[in-house]
Length: 638
Image (cartoon, rainbow, N blue to C red; front, side):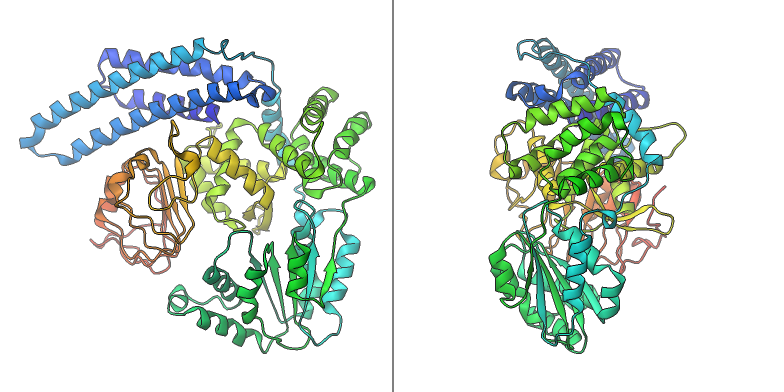
């Protein structure tokens, strides 16, 4: 991730130098020196062996590089902000004062860049003190081959996963058997066993669909909220307007669902439920319905399944045997069950055996190797790493280590894209078009020939699918990814990595950073608000000055002062009761993405026209697409 920060900064410095023609010679030289030092460190980072990255000393060195890159980026962005602010003040009487102010901020930038250069030189010189050796890595080969392979390799959908044929048959029979009582069919097992995949295969089968009048799928997970759960059920069934739901209390939401289901034979999936209280929260919304209504429950805890329905059917999928494990691996790595070359079978089977029959581990391993060169040398390196990582772990630990390995070997241009998933609520289905627009706005996408940024971003998304790091929920008519989600275990991996690398921060309450970020040398660059806690603008919010992206998924109205978010590139407000944007929104000169879907905003301030870097404007259904001066606005800004 430090390499991503350095690469992004190098691109920014080049653009900055070409746009700021009036820089004094000394400052220009300092910035060129900064570019050279960063380019050297970028090459060092590419060569740091994956094992060395696990060293605490190396982590400290990499963290120092990342923090300095962030500091330099902040200095450049603040300079651009201040210059733009002075331009907007205008007026002949202020011309002299503005010129003096501009000279001052240019001097401040020069002083800051000088200090950063000295820090970088110390960091470069200290690498030997940290015991950092440079070895030839095969990541370049992997990233290059992946760009070719994923265009020709058939996409393996979740429904193609092998090993569940008998399970699907058993569960389908239990769901469609003539039994007037509303019963639960529970799928119980450890994380990574394929419970959700199995449930989805049954849920989407033609025989099951024909048997029921209506179906709905609700994710629960470890962190849930009473109203949010009930509201999710109602939205999946009836799809009422946001205004209608806002007027309902909990009892009203529950009764509306009950009323709808009472005359229908329904099938509901309660996915990833962890505790009994979550069931108590939603059970009142599920009447007996017409004869034969069913509920599918997926959980890691057998006692929860028995609590939902003591007389229900309990199904415990087994780990895959050796043959099915190999078939699944080949399907993911080669696109067909018999696609492995004879010369790689021995190495491949050694790696698959370490997955202990867990479908998620096998799937991710196959995705990892699908983008590697099909040679003994390339596969031998992966086997060596797996052997090193798993020499003493138990099955539960091994799957986490395999998932971590799948992240470690990602080419750097995909790491930020993968960690970005954590900014969305857990278990959410994410619109691919929105995700691509966000990646472009963040600057994650590298230029490639004559292709547009969006076309390259689509390839990034497909590559993550090929690597089995994300799941395709829905494709559009042309075969492109339309909706996607991420497995819970990979979701939790993105949490730990994202927070460790200061990529993002979650669970901010009252403008205070969580405990694990307090005292950090660098504040997180992205913040997501998912909780119902208030985000007070009166609290200490100085750390927000470095935030580049704000995701607001809370029902609370967005109240944060724009003055605290001067360097913001992305502002995504969803489902908030906000009714208007502050006119100060026009001060966000770096803003590239503004999302307002699911809000109560009806008109936009005229200052929206001052956002000269805005690329994407996603509007809510209630919004009049004219600003308050009557000018027409498009959802996509050229």
